[in-house]
Amino acid sequence: MNTRIRKQIERRKRRIARRLDRDDNRGCSRPIMTAANIHYEIADRTQATAAGGIGAIHLLVRKLGLDEAINRGLGVLKINLPYHDSDHVLNIAYNLLAGGECLEHLELRRHDAAYLDVLGARRIPDPTTAGDFCRRFDAERIDRLQQIFNATRWKVWRQQPAAFFEEARIDADGTMVETTGERKEGMEINYKGQWGYHPLVVSLANTGEPLFVVNRPGNRPSHEQAAGYLDRAIELCRQGGFRKILLRGDTDFTQTGELDRWDEDGVKFVFGIDATEKLNGLAADLPLEAWQTLVRRVRHPRKTQPRSRRPNVKQQIVEARQFEDIRTVREHVAEFRYQPGKCQKTYRVVVVWKDLEVYRGQKMLFDKPRCFFYISNVEEKPAAEIVFTANDRCEQENLLGVQKDDVRSLTAPLDNLCSNGAYMVMAMLAWSLKAWSALLLPESGRWQAKHCEEKRKLLRMEFSTFRQALVNIPAQILRTGRKIVSRLLAWNPWQHVFFRLLERLDRPLRC
Image 1 (tube, rainbow, N blue to C red):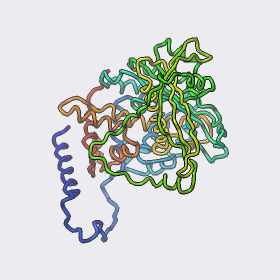
Image 2 (spheres, rainbow, N blue to C red):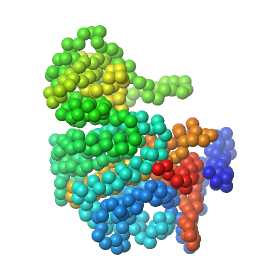
Image 3 (cartoon, rainbow, N blue to C red):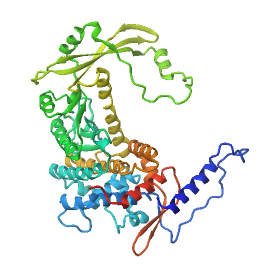
Image 4 (tube, rainbow, N blue to C red):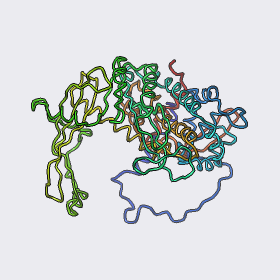
């Protein structure tokens, strides 16, 4: 990092540290917030934007050659007047990174002169034009766009250390995108009475990147088209350099007709499998010595002395109102061999026996044991680790929740199946850009341990936190004859990481 910039960051850090000093209690005889004589004016010469970090994201895109790849390979627009394909695709992703939540918020971006200046744009597409661009997509063009994203993804993966390529954990899941619209072509109603679409998302659990997104009507089963896209994800990760592949999914993704083929191809898998009468019978016939107590992992070990826990208010209400309450007493794990009907081989089935007790109020009514099954060809791990590996797939459910509520990519703002699918793919680019920003951070040097931890935190960071830390940085924008200068106006604890990313973008990528 530039010495002058490092000193400026340290100086701002010291200033804010003095203001946050807990031992300095001067002026506490009155409220802390005392401002009263506040006036607003409009600056005549200075241009500033709240999304000062968007320029760094655009530098990342240019460094990876994503904009050129989109213009070269997508081919949606026949005449580039005034916009190119990359302008539309990046416009949607940048809108979400800059704080927008829907297409209508593009109107705010295109009226922000400093935002346009930092991107070197005279103007950007308005919401209506962006929607029209999405409606030009069909299934083939959506697939072509995802291939362009994945080709760019390889460039980022090549910058990673050797340990990164040990194993690719690929997750698949479907999620319901509800809509109150009545004229959206392709929408359907599911078994819960929800109207909308049911996209399939295949993601890389190592980094949280969505590899493939395919939009489907709302009444389609979760596993539909999953085998084909899992095959494509396997090929993508192998070509990207991963040495091992692990597939994970819930009971809807067991894909018993594909297990033999994946096993012969050297692909490992851990899927949930429905608790059929036959599997329950096999579990009941196991001898007692086959069962072991399942001890759950401690996810967040305490680093300080444990404190007394506050009363469980929810549990108190459940007991006071005599609600039915199912409690887990203990869990046991065992395993046996099983050959599904569509398979020619036997596979390892791990069963978790949950001892459940049903209460009403504080009175226990009866025991209610229940079994959960997982089918796998991973032989080297103990049964408990298979269970934990399957449970870790919940990270993808968190990813889908973030895409819906935080990124706002899993929405249906347009009028048909393909246009909404195209919007989902372009909007999820915002999340991929966040992941790529973290993956490109260098880890070597004197402070390697610290840099590795910062990289990990940035990769796992919530999207809204990332947006506030690295994108929504107030900045003054200065345009000179040969360069665009973004002069940051505020400090935050992630600013040194921001400048380390900029330094990395100045250096050549590993081929």
